[in-house]
Length: 339
Image 1: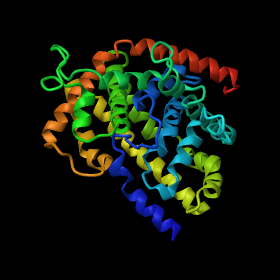
Image 2 (image 1 turned 90 degrees about the vertical axis):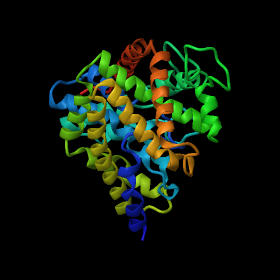
Image 3 (image 1 turned 180 degrees about the vertical axis):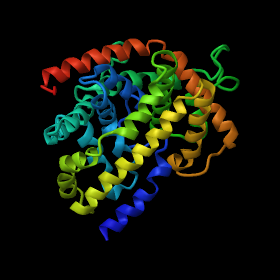
């Protein structure tokens, strides 16, 4: 029975997580392409192993897209990211993947996976403590707050009636402050992904696709070895076969979605922005718990404006990413993560 419940929940996974990670339980961080860029710059090894490092760096976010509370998404998300919560029973749980790896391919996957963590990895600077901006919140979280306070038309004086802020617009369609910050966070991530591809690494979208297409087939079993038994033990509605199914199915869905995402950000900027805006709006009813109170076409224009607004308020993104790469590399070495 447990297996049937899990399979039913996961059948909708591909529809939910094509581009958007708007799960209220998740602690959002750098965007997918940004994680790939960071791991590519770290590059412990070249060639095929570098592709595995890039794919491994996306691994901790695979489980952010499980909505069914009976599948214990909180537990999975904390396990793969680690936690700065001093009361957590295992703050370094992301190390389970590194400890389970034995072959060179598995070590490459695990190297990327560990680089993502929220304790001393890339997600720490995005969500906990920025290095050049947002030192008390994380770079992306701080930029999300700036975006909410940014007028939709930055060339005109702010007027809540004639030129509202993005936060005021989101509030007008009954989004809670938490929902506003979540969507602003996600939009900022995508804006930086697009800018990275357009201005820093023109092959970034291709790298996302290649990492997804050619990652070692050992990755699902590595995740199972690291987490399945503990997952089954800590989630009341999950047994070991179901835990294994959830982990492997989620990874397969995420892999296909990252191929699509790599294709999207490889397009010219106006097309990439439109594709992402359309997808966010298509998924918004599920996020809001009901139909949009405004026409879909109008909602797309708002999200497009927010993406461009995020680009305008993040002129320092390269500086923060470069600082993050140095920060993560030092911490990987300090913690003995080499192969």
